Image (cartoon, rainbow, N blue to C red):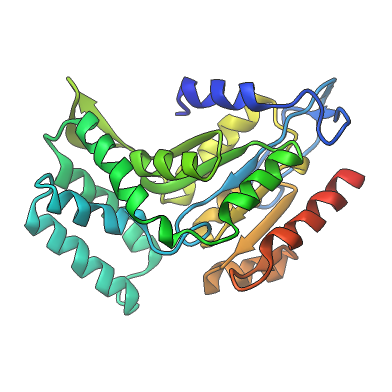
Amino acid sequence: MIDKAVLDALKAAFPETTSGRVHEYTSARAYDDDHPLVHSSTRPLAHSLAFFDLDGTMARGHMIFDFPAHLLAAGLFPQPVHASILRMQDDFKNRRQTYRDVAEELPRLYAEGVKGQKAATVSLEAEKFVENRMGNVFAYARPLVLLMREYGRPGLAISGSPVETVKALGRRLGMEAAIGTELETKDGLFTGRIVHNFIVKETKRAAFRELVKKLHLDTPACFGFGDTEQDESFLSGVGHPVALNPSAELRTIALKKGWDVFEHTQDVVAKVRKLAVRADAV
């Protein structure tokens, strides 16, 4: 599931020590909703990450809703499919559809809309799109990513938006790698089929497990930042979960589990710095 380039980028970013010391690594951790961390054997070196959802967590809005409008203006997306997306967006805002409904249907509409388009062209448009909406990024976003790097935790964007937009935004925020909703291509053209839908929690959970295994992650040292209940998939697996601008559903989960809950109106970087100092003092 995880592209080799993503794994290589994260491996290259890992420091040999974290905040001046080498952690012990706990491997082969069992992960499920009830028992997210189960200790097993140890190895001499540990690595940790900071997992970041993007939409709603690091920036206002949802790129998978907005990117089709950009593509439509560029002549790369059919108007009828975009109209369907707008209706879905209105239904979601007015609570006629649940987040889960949108999570399952929206990628299908997006895939239908870009079918037959060149993947390289869509990637170029994603760069333009993201550059034009940097005003949506919360003021704390890039400083937060850099803070996590300062404390030995490279940043990984894990988002349900199209992977082309996720990579573009993640790079601008200083993250080392990004994974997002991925579509199938053949001969450089989109086929209209979905390879991985990263909006739904099941895909995020599977990716998290794979990353833990392949990168030998010390999950209690990892941080995670998310804003919806779908992000519980990786927040439950890290030692330092943060519900950032949470939905009502995630807020309920976070309060029940004792997770930190922050809003964009607060000094997020200062609050997370305290968490990082405390984490590395253990």
